[in-house]
Image 1 (cartoon, rainbow, N blue to C red):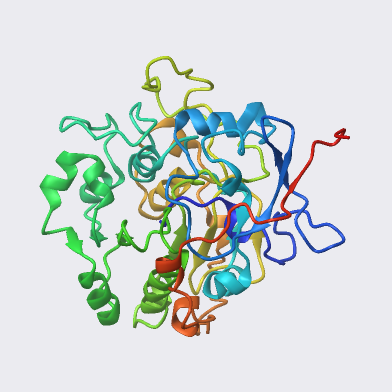
Image 2: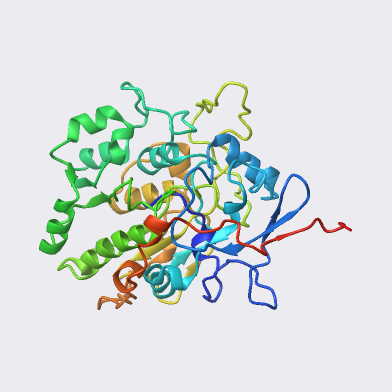
Length: 392
């Protein structure tokens, strides 16, 4: 699970039959746009470099709901995200990701679990609820979901699991879970590469980037995140246990970047109300998904030439794990989530042989990391803003 990018921002320009990306005009450019407060229009634009702005975009509870704009998805530029929200990258900027999304099945209705930030969405990934959390607030030492976490359920079923972390383990979002497993099931990233090479990965694992340099959150250079993801995916694909592996590549939330698909209603996980900052609205509470994020399934058993249009969210991963090991649901959300089996075909492996994916930009382009020094370029680029429609 990488950080902070919407489907359109990363895969909007993917030409794959059936994949719901940007609508493109006669000039080959996306027709997506969002207004400024004064009526001027910001058009979607290719990001000038693979680096991002420092202070923007924004994806907290308030900004995400301003962006959602009651389903019009036209509040991105006027929110704390500003004009950079309409930026996107294309194949030339992230060749590995595009080859991944062209070869393996993708889901173009995979939504974040909450219209909010990283922590609540990652809590949904491991417990199918955020127990009220909507923003990146520091977890209390006593925070723990009533229905347990997916790892508690795996423990009860005697299924092995590990959280391989670089700088921060997701299990630390529930401090008790982290303290109980640190050093045994919560291990530094080097152990992932050793275990993958030996064909000894556990039943379930989380693989985590360096959240300061290679998770793709702003202001990072997305080329570094792509390079990390490529290392992980290739380690699994070329490891001796490939024949019995399924890897899911996704993002925690949209990061404040534009997406054109309206997040649908969702089943609230429990009766816990959102702990919104003072003076902010609870909106639909936990009864709505967040914006779409990229998602691909990498496995010998993945379906060839397939784009799934079923609605998934992070709790669909919980539901998949629950389906495989016959585990009970943790909340109403994962109990009702689609378990992603739509993306695989267990009758015969379509990808028995590891696939040759394009090399990540940072491996092939000597200049890929130069923007780390020179910055993200001019955002928004000249010519990407037009006057209000009735402006004379």
